[in-house]
Image (cartoon, rainbow, N blue to C red):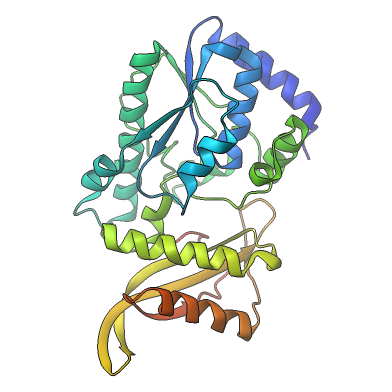
Length: 305
């Protein structure tokens, strides 16, 4: 386990050495990784850092409002509404790796525009060790590692937590005094709900996934999962009222893990699962059925794409 106090001092010194007196922007997502990277960099270079949060339209329910409230202490937080650009770039894309590369490139282009306005030459990211392992090991490209375009218009990319596992990042977050809503927050994929939608990403499917994730996180809070969510995996026939419907199938996934490298599907009691399916199908007319994923990692990954 990392010595959080020593790590913080070493990381701040490294950031100062890399960035110097130049300007930097931080790609802030609201997750623990980017939040720790932001806090470290803010302590290291202060007003030379501009925090940028990009609303891709693929975020959790209420995410943007939560970000604005939590990070109000960072002067000049920029919220970029890029929903139409991201969904437009994903139109017609069905391959999971291509999705990640499209999202990675779109993120970089958004940050390049913001960096130009801020006069920044450095981009700070919350990349952690498992991101690098999975990208370099050809498991899947992470939008902020293997999903980056070949040409990036930054003098340097700063990754303060690149050698840490998720549980170590949480230790650093606690040492930094970040609120529990950040330090203990459930992981959320960088590409957002795009990787919780099998096949083409459409506005309708994203809304179904967003609602399902919200329900699952609420209903499974007492189980304290490493990660829990709902994914849209296809369509199937169902019955609502006296009518036949061809609606979406939502797969519910809840796993236990220490570092995200391996994971075990959680045992959830039947009553809870029935409550989840009742809410998801009852609150969304476009959902025909709900299933529960019992697959561990490996052979599966935690996310669907």
